[in-house]
Length: 427
Picture (cartoon, rainbow, N blue to C red):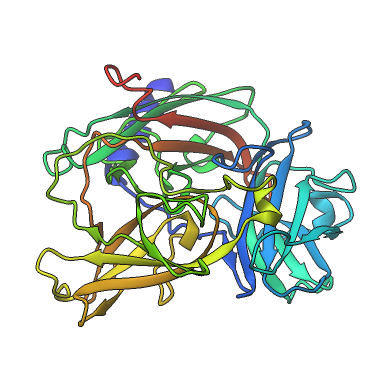
C-alpha cells in the first residue's frame, strides 16, 4: 500500500507538474478616502498577520480617513477557503462573541499639515474573535452596514498540526537556472487522518507576502506515511526579481538622497528619475522586499502625526522613448501590487520619461516597476530583470480539509529566507 501511494503521487505530480492557483488577492481598498492601511502583528510592520488560535497573539490595525470627521467604522471576520472564497457557514460557526465590532479608538492628526482622522484597533478583541483556523477576511465598513465596505485585509489563523522543513534552491532547468528560485519542502503531519492527502491537503507558497504571486494547488511528489514531499523541479519555481528600489520619506524637511526636489510647502516631492537596471550586474543590499513602514524621524507617533505628500515617480528608458507595445506600472505594497490606471506610468513626451504620482504618508518605502505586454497582459516581467541570487522571503501555508469539514483549516506556516537558508550566503 505504501509503495502504491508513492507511485500514484509521483505519477500525478508529473502529470500536473505545475498548477498555479488562480489566487484571489484578499486585500483591497474600496473607499478613496482610506489611506495607509496596516494589519500586522503588534509592533512588527514587516510580518504577515498570523494569529495562533487561542493564543495571546495580538494584531494591530491602522488606517487613515482623509475626511476629517468621526465616522462609525466596524469590522467583522469572514472565513474563507484556501483560495479566499467565502465559505457557506454562519458567522456564529467561526466567531465567538459579537459578529461586528466597532472601532472606537481614533485620533485627529496633529502636528502634520495634512488633516485626517486616524483609526486603530487591536485584534482579536475579547468580545469578538475567530474560533476556527483558516483564512479570514477582515472587512471594515461604515455604520454597521456591510454593504458600505471601506477595505479588506487578510488574517491567517493558525492551528499548528504540521511541521515544515524547507529550502530554496537554484533550479536545474536551463531556461530558469539563472533567473528563478525553486522552493522545495517536506510537510510532516501530526495526528491527522490523511487517507487521501492529495485531496485533503492544499499548499500555497507566497513570495514576499504577495498574494498576487501565490502558487499552489500542486500535488505532492512523494507520500511516505504522514510525510508529504514537494520536490518536483517544475513546481514552486518563482522569478527571483532583483533587490527593490528604496525611498526614504521619514522626513519631509530633511530630504533623502533619493529625492530630487520638493516644493516649499513639501506637498509635492519629486523622486530622482529611475533608470533601467536590467543590464547592470546583480549587487546585494538589504531591502524591504516591496513593503513599506509607517515611520518618521521627527514625531513621537507616526500613525497620527505623520504627514502626507504627493510623491512623483519618474522612469527613464535608455533612449528616452516610450517602449513599443509595453506598459509600465509602479508596484509595491504601497500600491497593493495592482496593475491599474492609478499605478500606470504615463509617458511625458516633453520630458522624455514615464511619470506617476502617489499620495503617500511619511515612511520608508521599497518599490519596483513591472512591464506588461499590451497585446498579451498575461506577459509581465520586472523591468530590472531576474537574478537567482536575489534575497527573497517565502511563506509556505499548509491547509487541511477532512471529508466532513466545511472549510480549510490552516495547520502549518513556515517562513524561509533565500540568503539565511542558503549555504555560503549567511551574513
